[in-house]
Length: 233
Image (cartoon, rainbow, N blue to C red; front, top):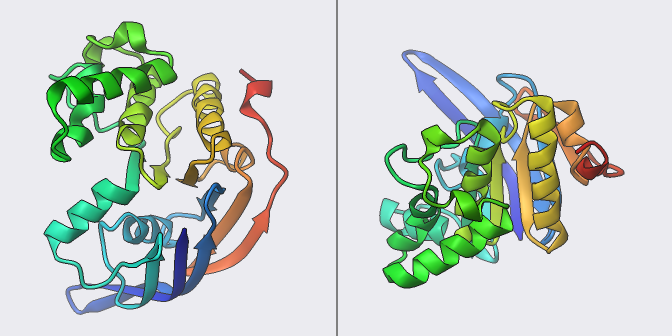
């Protein structure tokens, strides 16, 4: 599903060049649930941005579902993001003046899906995350956990190949974090490929594989015995 070889990325600030990724080799098979860990400055957010087609590497190769991701203009990059990827963010990134239903339906609007169909699909995914009764509520009427469930439903609505979750539990208390991870594990059980960036060891242990980054390099990549979040919910 994801094949990355010898990936390098640098940024220039003023007269200083910062070499953030220093030759990343990394692959993810369909259906995996992988966590990416590392301290601030390790390169994990940069790697996620490149995987998410929000940034481009300076050198190396990135293949997503057999499609080379290289030298894309913004129109094609946007189309690939819509086609292949679903995003879950720490800050939820919901539109405050739109209902839960409209937030979930938004990716389908950009894909040209007609209103009635996209609302049916959005309601299906709100039901899937247990929020059908909240479909017409605004984000400011919801708890943090509910907002993240809406964000997960939105990420799923376009049926992406891969879900990318950037600190999905970072803004949540422990109990709510485990409820969200229970939902993510259930989605993965159905075969969805999911990558999670996290700095929380207990969240990483709820995935099936942990990749550790340090100073722009992968220093450890190991399968783990998954802890089920349902044990704590």
